[in-house]
Image 1 (cartoon, rainbow, N blue to C red):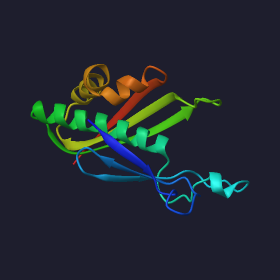
Image 2 (image 1 turned 120 degrees about the vertical axis):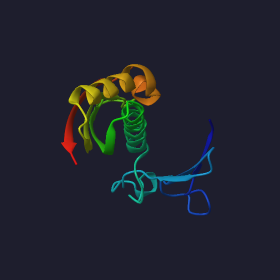
Image 3 (image 1 turned 90 degrees about the vertical axis):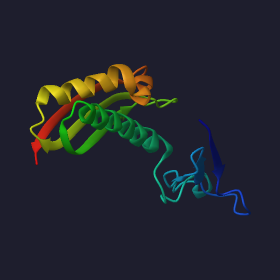
Length: 149
């Protein structure tokens, strides 16, 4: 896996904290920093997610992917899956994630709650490399609800 990240403020402007990542699979992802009123040259323009937001989003995508795949492999009629992630970070540098809560909403027909609970556990214990990696610094908790539909 590879990725090239380039600063977008380098071409003549020398300001801003925008970055563009080109992934090995050929996709583009923009990132930006928060505006800094005290020193605008050191802040972003709020044009894209913060880099740490993309880490959190990637983790949500990784685990939701696992949950859907595990449920489908179990022949469950899964029709939707979302995960809301809330987090806390350390107050001092490096501001690693210290707590992450993931709340899954799985929609489908006749999906037993035990199957969803098992899929989430399998993702976090075995398959989701992102959440397993973040679990080295953060306390990760989960919850879920199953919606018939």
